[in-house]
Length: 259
Image (cartoon, rainbow, N blue to C red):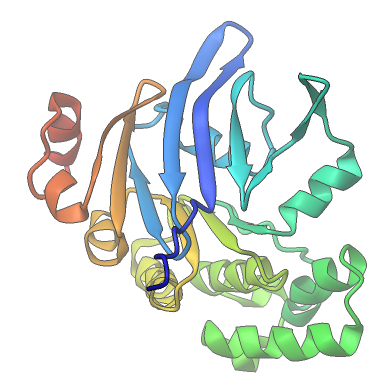
């Protein structure tokens, strides 16, 4: 009889602390995220959600604890029992595993949609242009924008620009996708098309961490919901438990504004 395969977390955060000067934003975050899992992070403004997301791909350096992605400590290495900061090149290599979609779309305005998507694979990761273009066209079809390859960002709606930003993040073939309030800058009527794209990604087995206030998305697409407040995780569990029957008073108070 073969032994069962024990799956390891794709993301492992332990005692993660982050401060900006004297303001402590993250106060000892512990979280494991398994391959293929969709985790939605909820919480009030200032609770540390976006900071935690930025720490995962080392856009912010942590002050204590550690974060691993795919078994590799992000931003640092242990050498002679001491942590050493990795070089910029080594950190850039680590980020190849991680795609990120921000609140603002951050597309290059002087480049077409196609050029935006192939910029990192060709310019940063050395992929051949022909392979990158073929992959970009597949990704545009995946996000429902095949006809916009030659358009410029200014010719697109906000929802379309955000879907291009998702395609661009996917172009590096990441193992992990981070979404930092991807619909917060959109007009209400454009939110649905971006959430629909994200739901499709969740069904395809992509590991995702999503910071959002879209409770309906959390309820429908998340495997797990994490509620943060004051730089800590105060409640965590299945959507039907955390959203449907929250136990912590802060979770109850927060969700009462939406439900």
